[in-house]
Length: 501
Image (cartoon, rainbow, N blue to C red; front, side):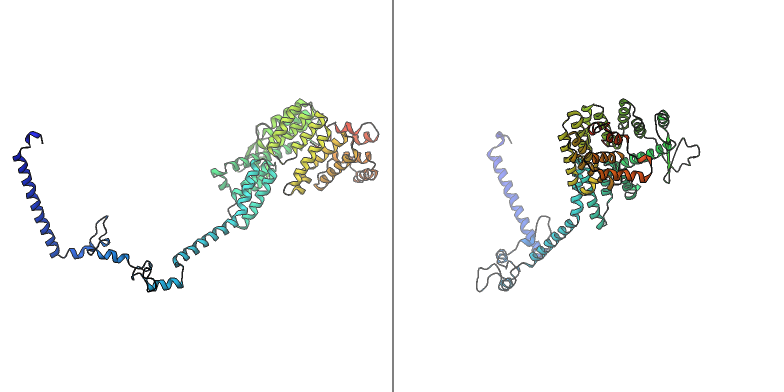
């Protein structure tokens, strides 16, 4: 309202209107209260329910609030205070009970439940700890390239989980991966096919298992099918070398059929596929490995040998791991030391607990550096490492003999024939124990026996060969030439024929 309208007359009019409204409001309020009392609404106030409002919290008698505050804190029913202590927050009866049972039974029950749950958790954790701990340690070892340790940890985890009858698909998959990387193709394939159902392998989480299974199965059937064709040749020589290579070339791109363990291929005119077989295509890597073997056996030029090896490793992790030591040794043996050293480091990453890195490095010390003592030391370092592993005594028999021979060859170059004989005896014993004695090891063992004056051992080997009556196991020309003084042990050590690669 503007100032010009605020006249005395107007102000008095507004005041009178407000007074009249107040009077009417009071009359209506008094009437409403009277009606409510007559209807006994006020006495039923505790039954009123209004959202956000608790009428029981109010009292028509202000003294009630104070009285409620004076009730016993324990029972909430009797007045607080006792004869001994009028100011006690408890009543006499509750105080007597508390003196007799000083703990809140609800708290005691709660504590017991908490302790029980904790004990159950500890028991369950203790039961699962061997599985979990070994699996995690295996994963760490696998990531670090410590394959033998990883395999041992997964074995322990599987053993512990088996006692619990737990779901072990994941553990079997991990063990298969370690076996695959260790080039144990048969064990990896068995772990996958026997322990991980095909339906489980189709799950996205087992994509890696499917890839391993496909690759391993392909490697296995390719090798078996190639061997079937090589059986047509009594032996491989310069005379039939070209024919062997042509046969291997002809298999490229051909289908292989596997049914109930039997292997056929497209070249088999007597076999007609019926659609129930597993079908594969010859793996090019394996074809090149067999070409390499033929070229190496027939002593073809180093470029041909290296080319086949390099092609073999191109498209398969499995074959890359298999071929790398052969390729590295070939590089070193042909004087390509830089490539040999680079590949040795790659081999170490493949398997930090394998012997191949130590073997190649020892060869580099011997051929490239002429540092024969370092060659001995690196071999001993590798042998000590293998022996320190879980089941090291068994592992050193299986893979340690390579290093024992390398140690012997370096000792020969140091003209330490006693230690060389001891090292080659170690190699000979390891191979005998593993039932894989090679002619090279036996011959070097025989020559060092002669060199150190152990004629009984040499004569014993001669008698065994004679009793066997098979010229295929006779001493090589190296032994007779050494015996006749036509060649020295140092020349033999540097010839490359005794590196066992």
